[in-house]
Length: 330
Image 1 (tube, rainbow, N blue to C red):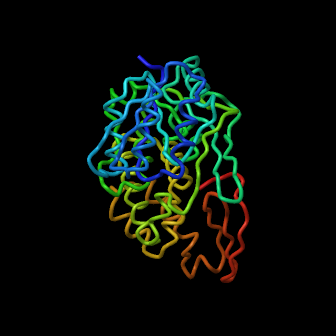
Image 2: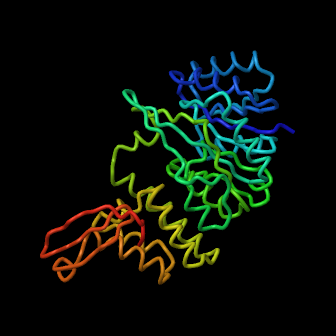
Image 3: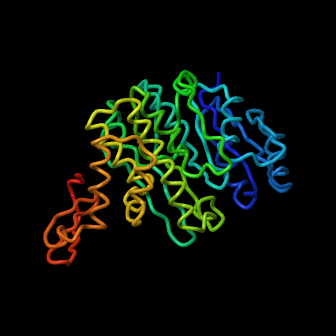
């Protein structure tokens, strides 16, 4: 059994694909399996995949007849994988040479079901390093696990195979499954006994004009996708009977990863979200507080303090004064 299986769907990313593949075949971790899913890719990508398959025995290529969507491609890779841990990589990104070795060795040593690393956002003219917010190396307990997860992405993490298989954790098969990494990640975090943070190696997330989310040009459509995933995760939290502290951690995670505040900033955002979630006093109260920070009543505009995670809004006689909320409280 390989130590790690890395799953990567490929669809028309020939400009970036060779750099990505070179970073994967250059990994210092021995016994790594690369599952490349040809998701109806163009001929240029097929040629690159064939070249690497011919030179590397640890590469397995799954050819799909057409583009079946990101989630279905990921699921096809999951079914074909055999590694003790499972990782995911986007075909226009790249990883540092010790990336999977550091994640695997840390998870294996600390007996964690999930390990995740730091990452760097690569823009055409600059980079941004996304560092861990905690100094600890391992956390357990749902609220703590949700608090240390930066976002709902799966590409900067590895997951123990037993965790994924035993709980049947899969990706959405919807053709437009934007933001739904969050659903896979949220379930994995819920069931995991512990998560390890890995320092001093990076996943490089390459931001370009053809990135999937950049192609969702309509802001209304973007928010609709976010709202559906947010509603799904809130209902999942209710189904699993989250405690009050876990609900707070859930709301913070939804704001960090899915921009919950931005969704509720829309005048009709709260109404649409409440129509999609099961009624719960805690979650409803949290959502109203966030919404009122953007849309206070006349009474609250006279004098009130509204919390919105990263900042507080102070209203005095209709004037809004913003200041950072260092305590990050609701």
